[in-house]
Each structure stands twice: as C-alpha cells, then as structure tokens.
Amino acid sequence: MATVLVATSLTPGGAAAEGSQTNYVQRLRLQAQLQTLNSDLLSHDSATAVLQGLCDRRDPAAPRILARQVQVPDDLAAANAARRQLGAAANEPVHRRRVELTCGEVVLSRADNWYLPGRLTAQMNTDLASTQRPFGVVVRPLNFQRRTLSSRLLFQPLPAGWEAADPADLDAPVSVPANVLQHRAYLQTPDGRPFALLIETYSDRVLIP
Image: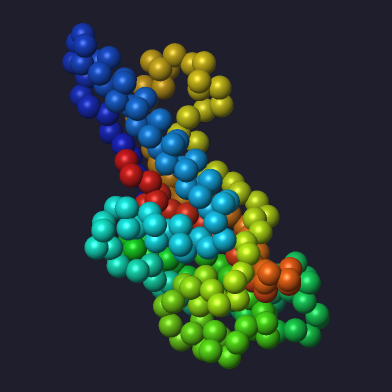
C-alpha cells in the first residue's frame, strides 16, 4: 500500500510558503535516502549487511535481519534462464528461494534467489532450506563478491532537471509507491565462478518520511 506524505494545512500568507517548503524538503530527503541506499548496495557485496546497517541506525536494539521464506510454484523457464545466466550445465540443479527480508516486523525487501546447490556446502543447503537466515549470511564463508547486473529506481521523488526548477513547482505532496528500488545481481566466488542470481525489490519501508 502506498505511503502518502501529507503537507501541512495552508493558510494565507507565510503558512502557504511554509507548506510548499515542507513538501520540497520531503522530496529532497527522500531523494537523498534513495540515492544513498542505491550507492550502498552498489558498493557492498552483501545486501543483507546494508539492510542490517539501516535497521541498526533506526534502532540500536534492532533485531537481526531475517529472511522469511515465501512459497512459490516451480517455474521451469525461469530456472533454465537462471541456469544459463550462471553458466551452469544443462543438467546442473538450480534451486529457487523467495524471501522477505525483515527488520522486526517491517519488510524492507523481497528477494528471489536462484542458486546452484552443487556449488555450496551441505550445511549451507540445509540452512537455506530450513532456516530464516539470509542468503548472504549463509554463504558468507565463500567470501563471495557481488556483481550488479542492473539497478532501477522505481520511485523518483524529484523529476529530471529539478535542480534548476523553482521549489514552488515541487510543492505537491509526494506519494511513495510500495516498491522504490530494484537490483539484479549475481554472486560469485573469488575465482569468478557465479553461484547465485538475485532479484531484490526494496519496499517503501527503507525510506523514512
């Protein structure tokens, strides 16, 4: 459900200007948060670590990020596409894990992970199938590296060319969609062998209104 940031009530004179400034500042803050999150994800190998840092900054006593598993039907076409993208043999098994990454009860992102179980340890495969440990936490012993395939902003708090615009033109309340950012990436071992393909969609809850 979209989050709507409502401006203060406008009354004649200075209050109207104050309301306009409030909406403009809200847009600036949301733009900065979104760009910072995107930059952090692009510069770190573990998306889970980035989300844990965000969770910790909001609450020093925050719980660990958990991966709440979501059941999904088999999708042979998607599995075959992931297998090809990972450079796996046609007969090499590929598993899919869909999760909601949560900070307490707040869902920060939803991720689809296609991974090659044959390139993980037996304990890693058990943990991925039976626990709420995030993928990046489980496979951390592999010293993996993240390679981003695409980064797409699903929300633009400020339009292109906003730097030259009159702030008064940006005085409308901003409506934040349910999803604000999406990354596609794969994880590889230090020798360059990919073992997982990720599609991560970040919710509006990564932003602070």
